[in-house]
Length: 258
Image (tube, rainbow, N blue to C red):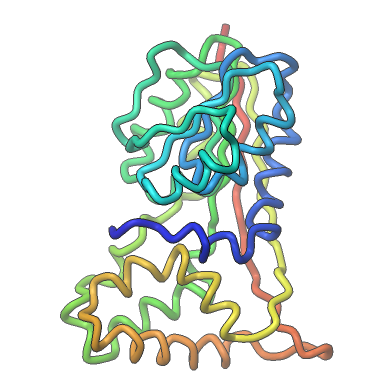
């Protein structure tokens, strides 16, 4: 994919950061020496880690140089490096590997999750949050629009554009052999959005991005307009005029065996 847009991503920073806060709240570590934020983005989640663990060495990893530049400006005391989670290996095992809304972009979870768990120091923690909204109208509409318009050929197999997040029980089984304790849970957020356009802006920074990038420039706006009409119908106005964006997420916090 083309590089990410930090400015577009942070338009909804408070909503995006709330799950990161709730994931971190369940991490039972007191004084970790080294913490890694995998898929750190513009540093909003890394800032939570730096505030929680002021004595730790905090590192952020991301594939987007634009996101990393934003994170470096935000947190000059932390280290941010370009890297691909799929091939990332720490030089020394960190005490906490924290991945907030990033692993859903990485393939082959059956091997990825045990590999990450094995990369944590004994007694350390792997903490993960991933959206589980592939079948919500916000995302199913992307695939429906992609398959039904003049852009269908350019986009190709719409179902394959985004990696499918597995049931939470599958991740539990991936982590259990390496863990002395695991905490898993699900949460459904209902984000109050001012308009259908706002929902489109939210997903343009993330899930809609790989669809739009496959299209020639003269088809991109028509695709987004068709998607916007579906979103307008799928998320009706509430009594106060706002739209409720339903957003399921899954969480897991696993402590590695000592």
